[in-house]
Amino acid sequence: MSGSGLPSFDPRDPLGIDDLLSDEDLAVRDTVRRWAADRVLPHVADWYERGELPGIRELARELGSIGALGMSLTGYGCAGASAVQYGLACLELEAADSGIRSLVSVQGSLAMYAIHRFGSEEQKNAWLPRMASGEVIGCFGLTEPDHGSDPAGMTTYAKRDGGDWVINGRKMWITNGSVAGVAVVWARTDEGIRGFVVPADAPGFSAPEIKHKWSLRASVTSELVLDDVRLPADAVLPEGTGLRGPLSCLSHARYGIVWGAMGAARASFEAALEYATTREQFGRPIGGFQLTQAKLADMAVELHKGILLAHHLGRRMDAGRLRPEQVSFGKLNNVREAIEICRTARTILGANGISLEYPVMRHATNLESVLTYEGTVEMHQLVLGKALTGLDAFR
Image (cartoon, rainbow, N blue to C red; front, side, top):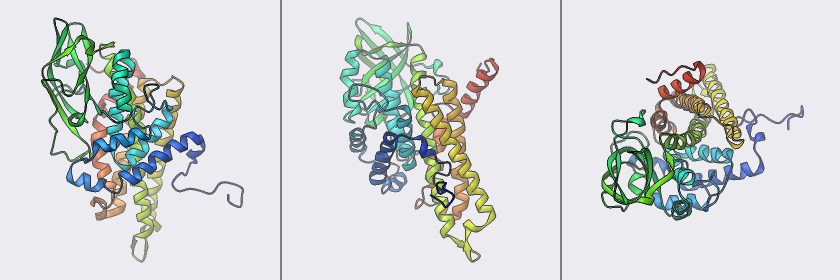
């Protein structure tokens, strides 16, 4: 406390946002932060430079052991954490690297969430406990080579053949695909769009890894190829019909991005703040110059406004009051602002800003993918535009 009786000013929490968190919230956050500091931060620059995520199965099991996989789901070995706690975990994971948060988001908010919400009891018991522990990695097949923002145009097709289903098609830009033990694949049928639980060892299923990425390099990204994949009748998700199914999964995953993007921004801001107090030019630290202080002040304002927005949306989700349009609001704002924070941080670091010895450029390039996946800027602008005006501009 200062002499006035007020708390001291914390440059890393200038608004005192931690005061909004319970002891349990803080314990979850600190557990994930320690794990990331121990298992990711010492290695991630090398992984990024090499364009691979070695030991991903071991990492998944460790994430399962701390309750980070499907953590906001209940039962079946899942942690049953609050939405705010899940968001805090996403922030800490993405402060390490967007690829690690993507691994967790796809596992829990897409693949596990789809099975948990739309699956049969048999499907839940067969897959969710092993996915929650990290024994089985999952992926989510919606995007196609020619159908990204318009999933209704998908061409992957599942037809009935006696008591079986036979699926043909391709999915693209699928996180975890090449290491997944199970894929949730969405396909067109004579009855509308349906979701299917596809074991990775099913004949005709393959997942070649996508190489030559300049973003999310410490992440496994794949194509899914389904060539006459034959599945039993009970492979279909019984409760998921139409686009409502995959879109609700995406809304849950986008919520995690609202928090996660602020993790990348925080790591870049903190790198710039530390650099500004130690790097000297013209005989004094560059943090003592007005232009640098203006940059740091603007970065701090946008960073902590974004965290407050994420926290507000989390409380609404916990209360069962979060609308998809509000998730679009958060994703649109926080990813855009996170990229701008990273770019400004890079200018403070100067030439060192492009070096992998610092996290800034890695976060900036990762966020270029985060900006696009699970809804581009333009799509979220149109979601909000329709909500504001009542007029549909999508078509």
